[in-house]
Length: 225
Image (cartoon, rainbow, N blue to C red; front, side, top):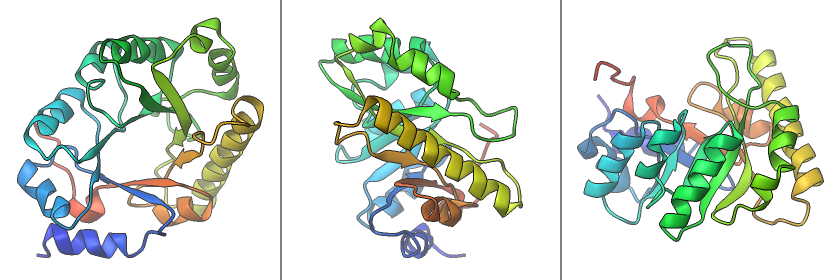
């Protein structure tokens, strides 16, 4: 069985240099994550707030931690002291909580708006009307401790690559529309987080700037705990 260092380097070699690779380390023990860290990689993603907080406490402090899962408002406080980016903003209420918590920490937290582009009922995310309502709200305009940097979305889990490509292209169009309408003069609004182990190459072809890859590096995840 190949080491995680070997599998990481194989994955890394397939990712364009202008695309940020987020190594998804959720459910994985620190020892396994450190194998990838020792290869020089510093960007990791988790989807459970308290698990991420625990890993942050025990792991090197030069890691750039991304939160990539559905985030409940009562868990925000675990992340705002250190998280680099939260990918999963799906409501104004969540954004308000992050802003309030980040203000207490005297930090600005980078965030992505999550959009629902798949055909699966289990996925979270905004539609364009909800995003416009959020971005034009007085509450959003007053926020000083969050920075919206782009969009995130997940394609349907299917072998139909035409459908996957269509959904990623839709997310790219959403990004362009929001960029033109609300962030035309903002250099920091530039990220399109889309693509995972099974569909990252299609995502990159469709304009992804960030891919989230875990199982290709660590093997299938352990969900028993």
